[in-house]
Every structure is written in structure tokens, then in C-alpha cells.
Image (cartoon, rainbow, N blue to C red; front, side, top):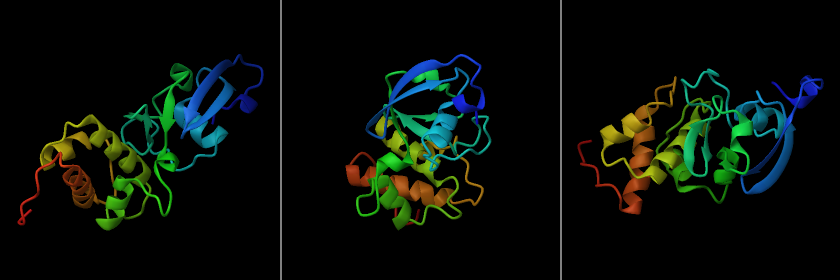
Length: 174
């Protein structure tokens, strides 16, 4: 946690971000990652700190609709940008289609990786590059699930893509 309060003698940089639709202004140290800013300064703890090296995807958020590992992104490089975390995608009673599909397909077990998996899946759908189950698996390969819910995660993404009409229907044997 590298917040301003932790090191008041070091220089800070001004930063303006729109996070989950709300404008925020900060004075932060230049080494503060987006992940630390979200979790420590804004208490948006849905975004998880997994490996802190960009290898697990637990910290995935959307920057203007594009998925990114927030542990690798310095917050000061995002001035003026729009960030969406799991908290900004939906709420009980008004869930994002990906969230609904994750519930319907039981695409989570312990839940630790689920916020990153969902944000990554939203980014994958936005990108429009997945046209087969193999492509879904490849495009989601940056998000690890230690519980092994990969089949159900792919099912959920296929379901959403199928409902959008951008994905061929699955064979009954799959």
C-alpha cells in the first residue's frame, strides 16, 4: 500500500479519473499502481491482489472497455481515463449479462478470481475476437482459477456471445 499518507515527504502528482461512472481527483505518489489506488484509497476491494506480477489476472479491470491487469499499471499514466471495476458492472437485481451468465453456469467456486474473470470476460466480449471455444480459452488464458472452473467460465462466455448473435451455437455433445 503506497498511499500518500504512508510517505508524506515524497512528491505527489495530481490525477483525475472516472471510476465506475464517478469523477475522482487525487494527489498520489508516482509509483502507486491502479490496483493499490482502487483498493486502498477508494476501498473498492472487489478487485483482488493475487500475484502482484500480472500473471494471475485477479486484478483485471476495464480501462475504457479494455481489460488490463491493474497491478501492472501506474495510476498516474491514466489521467483523464475511465475505469470500470467489478463494482461498476452491475448490482444485485441489475447484473451485467456476464455476471448473470456466471451465476447461471456456476462459473465460480471460491470466488477469489471471479471479479477479474468477469472483467476479463466483459473485455473479451467487447473485443469481438472470440469465435470458437478454443479462442475463448486462449483469450481468457491470462486469468487463472485455482479451483478449476474453466469449463463453466467458457460456458458462461459462450452463452453471452450466443445471445448477442456473435457466436455459433454449441453442439449438443460439447
